[in-house]
Image 1 (tube, helix red, strand yellow):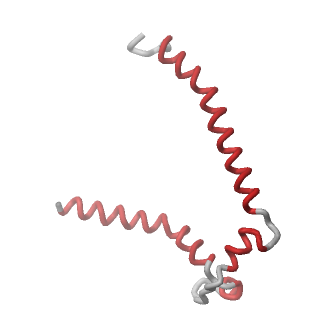
Image 2: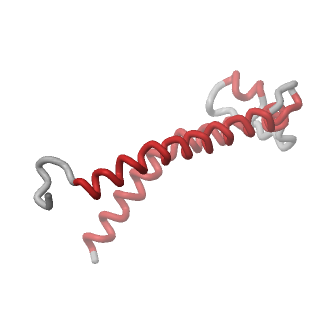
Image 3: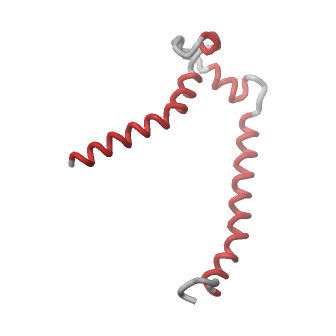
Length: 103
């Protein structure tokens, strides 16, 4: 039990260490522009979500269109990859390949 506790604590420490950039990005997204420019340890919370409003379209960007384009490209990539890899997988399973112990 003691070893599992030590391993769990080490895993939690590594997880926290690797989550720090994401935590920092979320923390920065809620800060005001002046607080971002003044340094990392100045805390000014922006409860108006201005950075998110700007990202979603208030600054003249069409975020919905960008998101739609990303979804369409992702779906097309998945379909194309599946169509290309399916015949290759079928041929490997049915015909085998050199060096395989099963034929």
